[in-house]
Amino acid sequence: MTTVIRRATPADAYGIARVQVETWRDTYPTILPHRYLVKHLTLGSSTASWARTLGHADGRDSTFVAVDGDAVVGFAAFGPSRERNLGFEAELYSLYVLIDAQGHGLGRRLCRAVAMDLLDVGRCSMCVEVLAANPARFFYETLKARRVATKEHPFAGVVLPTVIYGWPDLHLLAGATEA
Figure 1: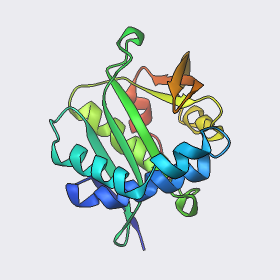
Figure 2 (figure 1 turned 30 degrees about the vertical axis):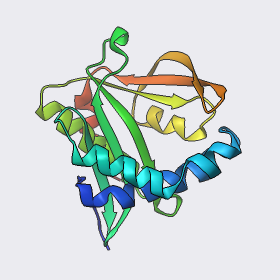
Figure 3 (figure 1 turned 90 degrees about the vertical axis):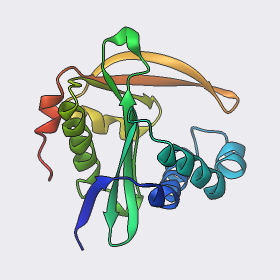
Figure 4 (figure 1 turned 45 degrees about the horizontal axis):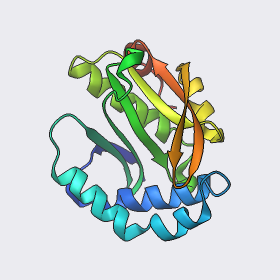
């Protein structure tokens, strides 16, 4: 079956939440506190949060999903940059693809869809903040993102170092091949 990339709807809340919970638990067990991943990151709370987010869209933030058959297997959420001092117009807030769906170009396709959507509304640059300990962060380097800053964030009772990558010109990312 061919995986389709499309804009998320409120009906996708459960699928997005499932991807988020599963990928966080698979990716961050040695990075985030166990108690957070098990007790606070639940399918129910994540579904409710995504239902609110997708149901109250104000046009500033957007989410794309990768759908295989009837199942959401990945998603990308984005909107205006929260890092205004870095000079980027937009930010990729999150990008997750289920482990079984990784390695097939879905992350690249989601990023490309985000870049094309942002260019369509006149936003020409984007950044993404990634946990420094996340080995998947190097994926952004394969998409020609530049490392532009580092930060530290308190999260779930620990301080986590992050890396901020950026694309000063989204035309490069929008033209990325899908394979």
